[in-house]
Image 1 (cartoon, rainbow, N blue to C red):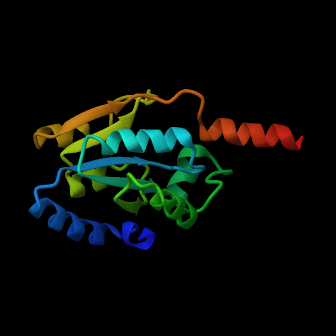
Image 2 (image 1 turned 90 degrees about the horizontal axis):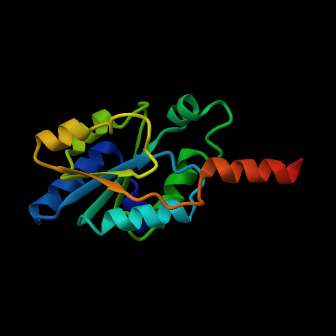
Length: 160
């Protein structure tokens, strides 16, 4: 089952054709998901409550490195997508190479775009496209106390 969730972008688009033929609402979110934690899981569960099919775009290793720095990702894309695929609320996962998921969002053209409530880096990428196609953009409340960066800091402190 896990292997069926992880797909290429081309495979994803074919799968979504089938889902849409069954009148299922497609939701999309994205992220690095470097060290999966309860905040991620709760966020994904909340997003899934609002759509029939939840697609997760995952930043490639090179994309994470450009965005987060030379020491990231802690876990490679195969690890990150496999662990993410074990989350029940996730239906499909695909990797994107770019720094933002904008091109992937345009390809998927979801009816719902989700972003975490901790997002403070300006406009939500892909929101204009989704809204132009009569879709919705939803902010999912942030779950306090969980952060990959904080987990990494805690590990470093315990080592030194």
